[in-house]
Length: 118
Image (spheres, one colour):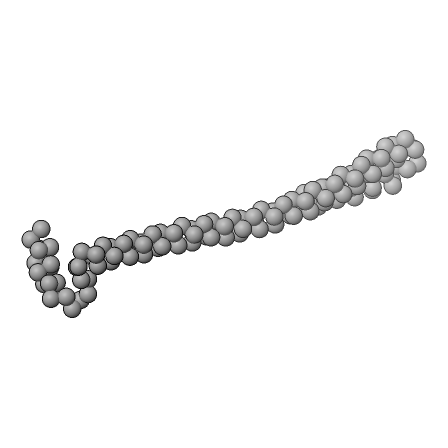
């Protein structure tokens, strides 16, 4: 788009130079040329601002994914801690009732048979 505007400026400059003899038309074309220069400068500024914004959005996206990952890690940590607490509570309850959870427990085969029947 900027190339198109630059080409238009070139055409306007050529016309202005060839018609400088009449005064009024040359002045009008020079004025238009000046306004085109201002428009190009503003378009370049807008383009720079858009590039900056695109970079900021990309950075924000990375920060968002990092924050979501941290949130997931926090939730996972809480779930693991809750599971460990449940296992500890089960272990305490079995200890209170005199039930052994060790693999060498002689009552273990009976427990497996009871589970198969259930």
